[in-house]
Each structure stands twice: as structure tokens, then as C-alpha cells.
Length: 130
Image 1: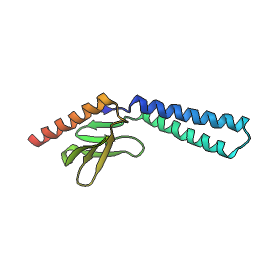
Image 2: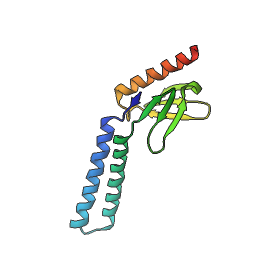
Image 3: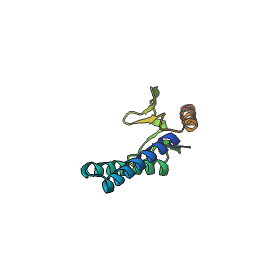
Image 4: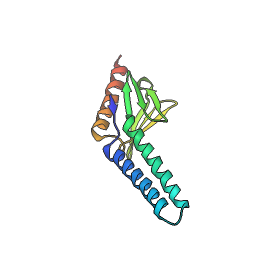
């Protein structure tokens, strides 16, 4: 099962990145002050890369009893080792003895997020029965 990033998160990062990049580029060519323009171009480039990562990777995946948070700094844990799953504000926190994955509700697609919670509960219950 795959949980994708929300469209709001993806497109807002892309639009902010393009806006900052083009503002820095236009100010570089037509403006007087040169130092701040490079900073705008760098910020815009970073936001464009962040949007590219969100378009490329899924936010969270469950495969073969393993919950994986994808991206450049990925984390994974086994559902068998799951000790606690709690909702704290806008986040779903999944804990084992030595690992913790935090899933932000606002960054995840809402339909996929609800299916993710149910899937984790279902797999945990099926493993507890066996």
C-alpha cells in the first residue's frame, strides 16, 4: 500500500520555488542590488528540488509487514515490532523499541492516510492472532 503526498504540499512547494527562482533571476538582470538575488535563486532551487522529491517518491509505503517512510532520509520499521501507534495533533507516531516514524497528516493524501491507519491496525491484529 502506498500513501502519496498531498497535492497541496506538492504544488505549493513547486509554485513557491518557481516564484522565488524567477524573482531572483529577474532581479539579477534588471535590479541594482546583486547579493540578495543569488539568495532568492538558491531558495527557489531548494524548493523546486523539494517539490521534485515529493512528485517522485511516495510518502509512506507498507510492504510485507514493513512500514517505510520514503524520501532522501528514509526510515522503516516492522509492524511485528510495533509497540504504540498514537495520534498527536497533526501527526501519527508509530513506535517500536528503538525506532519512531512520524507521519504528518497535512503532507499525506487524506484518503490514503485513513487507509494507512486501518491497514496498520489490521496487520497488527492479524499478527497478534497468529
